[in-house]
Image (cartoon, rainbow, N blue to C red; front, side, top):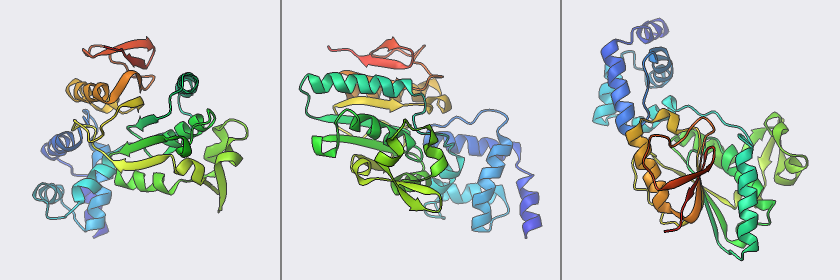
Length: 277
């Protein structure tokens, strides 16, 4: 069976690849480019092996007719790319620290943030550490919503346990302040951070989103590179709806809103302001 399975993996036909591309786009907004056949066959193949399937068309049929229950969610989990780290693109967190400090000094009492593509939790927990350094905690009505498409990666984020080596990039003193030893060379997020973050599955391709807002800052970083302009525009428009006037949208350093008509003003590279109306 194993030989037949791997033989099948090597035989992903062009029409089957195009079917997977269409299905992934329709259900997640992720635009799989040309030349991704090997990635699709490898990642989809893992799901097929779990299900005991040896034929790509049969797997496509089961996805489309729903006969395998939540298999569509599992397929998207397999396709999704999750690359992240603590304090990735650190200039953003310097900016957030500056703005949060200004809002605190101005007397603001309620703070709401959204990590829209939270992956395995490093981004929202970095945000929680940054805000904690400004004196903002769950006790000061500070909340962070962290969402992702992948149920698998959200489960890891909720657990909040990381290899000690992943904490090497943290500022001095942060590891002991915000993490506790969890055995086996791992560290677990302390409750002071965990209580600030709520994790939820959300598909960014299908706004409007259920949150009401208003939000202070939204981080949609390093995810729009997988979307076309139609999906990007709808996502950005709903972020604009959810932000307060004077709130900020942060995108990845390799991303921009260039070419999109939006209600945002660029205040620095990858940082956009929703102007007061």
